[in-house]
Amino acid sequence: MGITSVRLHPEIENPLEDLSKKLDRSKNYLINQAVKEFITRNSLEEQRWLETLEAIDSVKSGKLIEEKEVNDWLESWGTENELEPPNL
Image (tube, rainbow, N blue to C red; front, side):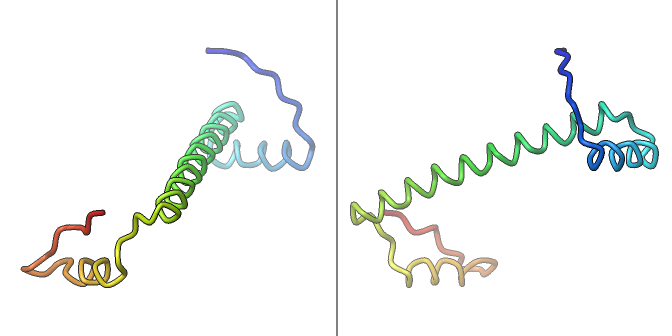
């Protein structure tokens, strides 16, 4: 495990110290959890962005599914006659 030194501003350090005491967790643990969550969130945002670009390319190339097909599929959810998802 690597060691990284971080300088925290008092407006972060003081609440972090209070939270550490309140949760009975080390500041190290809380900082690691926060960084892990930040990295995960950014990874998800990157994936969503890539999916958005893919969707834009699909629309530009005319690969579309009609709204009615999608609505019919959604309305069938949970029924005895649930439809398969529409395909391109």
